[in-house]
Structure formats: structure tokens, C-alpha cells
Amino acid sequence: MRIRLVHGFALLSTGLLAGAFGYGAANLVPTFNAVPLEMRLSFHAELMKMNGITMQAAMGASILSSLTLAVLTAGSTRLLAGAAGLLALASLLITRFGNVPINGRIKQWALTSAPADHAEILRRWELFNNMRTFAAFVAFVLLIVLAVGGLRATARSVHDRADRS
Image 1 (spheres, rainbow, N blue to C red):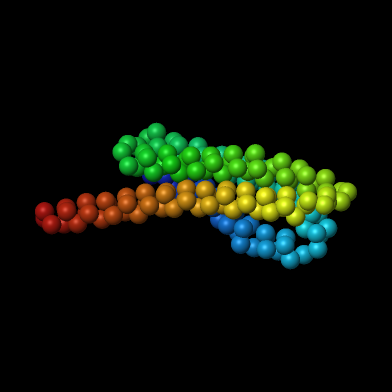
Image 2 (image 1 turned 60 degrees about the horizontal axis):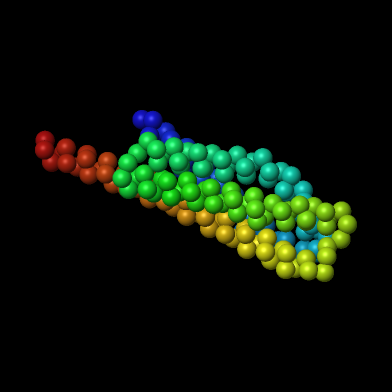
């Protein structure tokens, strides 16, 4: 039962993380690119204030729950859960060392003005955003594979018992 709860929490937190990053990549980034630069910078700076706590919590929960699942299991389940935890950790590290420093610059630009090379810096932010989104998405897929595999094993077990009756 404990493993199922941990797996459920890992699915939930990693799904929320992948969904939030996916929504940002599919909707926010194109919108950032469609509006005037000053509007993008102001909105981006405000959005980062709100995202700081929620996204860190989602990343932390994804990492801890996936790695806890890896510790509680064995074999291929351990490998997939561990890989999901490491991918969630990768999304955190990409965010911390890629996006966050650029977010700090964007916050300054929103108060002053963007430098001449701002387009290249914003492209780098988008690259980091795509990388962390991909990492979170793959982590979520790995946890789904575990859930589907578990359902398949449970279905086989029920089928085997029915055959014996």
C-alpha cells in the first residue's frame, strides 16, 4: 500500500510539473514572443514571482517522491523510478542554473531597458525552458509506464486466479 501511495504522489507531482512546464512552452512562450518587448518583460518578471514557490514545490515533490519510489522498489521499477527522479532533478538544475539567472536579468530589464543582445539571451532562456520541459515530460512518462505495467501485472494476476478456479 505504501508503494502505491508513493507512486500515486510521484505521478501527481510529476504530472503537475510536466503540465505546468508544457503549458508554459505551448502557450506562454509564444505569447511572450507575440507581444511588445516591454509587455513581455513586465509580465515575465511578475510571473516569475508567482512561479518561484509553486514550481520549486512541484520539482521538489517530483524528485523526492520518485526517488523514494526507487528506494522502496527493486529491479526495473527501481530503475524507471530512479530515472524519473533524476530527470525531475535535471529540470530543477536546468531551472536553477539556466533559467533563474536569466530571469534575474529580465527583472532588471523590466525596470530599465533590455540590452542590444536581449534576443539571444531570451532565445537561451527558451532553450533552457524546452530542456526542462522535456526532462519533466519524460519523467512523467516513465512513471506512467510503471503505472500501466503495474496494471498489466495486476490484470494478469487476476486472470491467472480466474483460470485456476
